[in-house]
Image (cartoon, rainbow, N blue to C red; front, side):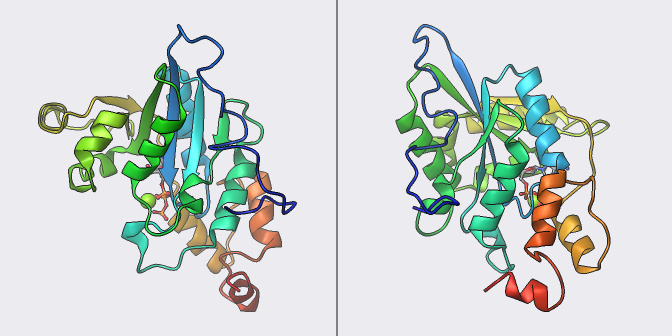
Length: 237
Ligand code: ATP
Ligand code: MG
């Protein structure tokens, strides 16, 4: 388990704010949204997407869960998990419905969504419904994910699409009928921002201000992340 910033062992199982979700009223159904990703770094696209999912689908809480070793990004240089986690913590701090969990980072080995969902399912009571939020692009590859049938059993899916990009009816039908997934398609404000673009901008010495929260922007500056110079090299060691 990673120590928190003060080096003290944490007292919670999933995350600081929502470990007890579902316990207040056992007769009520609670909706928990899960935002998975590398978050290298977290940006306004992630935050707006999570907030609109919360608002439009009536989520009680959204947990950002940075991946430990993303299976599909193994050939890329990924910023140390402690930095990605801390940037997420800083980014969500001002939203009482958001939190960050280090469960994927704490787990040894490769990150698989199915393991995360199993862990969350085992932690939360049955009156907490799990919703896995993901970009519509990723949704189509979901059938190839490890244990996708299990994923379908553990969580509902929220497929986030951009305005003007309506997934073809055929795609929706295939997903619903052939995979057993319960999918909601949610159109969010299109913000053409990506972590790759932010990383490139910093490396090129261009501004990323307003593309992520000010606190995250400052963290990146202070820790010399993504820079294409000696300072940037030090951020890896
Ligand atoms: P990278 O460029 O490194 O791939 P990214 O910006 O795509 O990073 P990820 O951490 O890969 O960010 O994405 C996490 C989740 O957020 C995914 O489900 C992805 O589809 C979604 N997402 C990423 N960018 C946006 C955006 N601009 N608007 C809405 N959702 C987004
Ligand atoms: Mg991506």
